[in-house]
Length: 77
Image 1: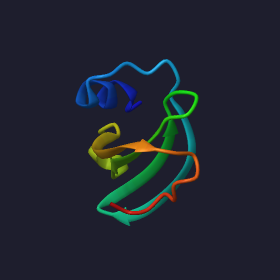
Image 2 (image 1 turned 60 degrees about the vertical axis):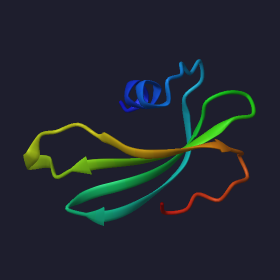
Image 3 (image 1 turned 135 degrees about the horizontal axis):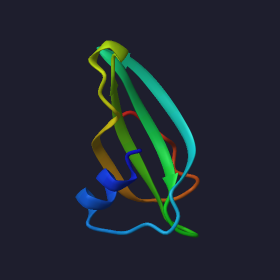
Image 4 (image 1 turned 120 degrees about the vertical axis):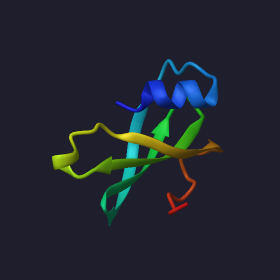
């Protein structure tokens, strides 16, 4: 659901957009840290906020880190 947000903010188009791993952090909703494969050898880390269900809003891309590899640890940022 956040692929269009990432492509817009990073000014890129991704043929591949596959989540590999994720972590969560509970705040006033849930913060997801997601490792996403965007090409054969390129990965990005996404920070996505999902508000509480009663707010009825979809996930929102907060920030991202590019230039990652499959072996880079997924950390909170």
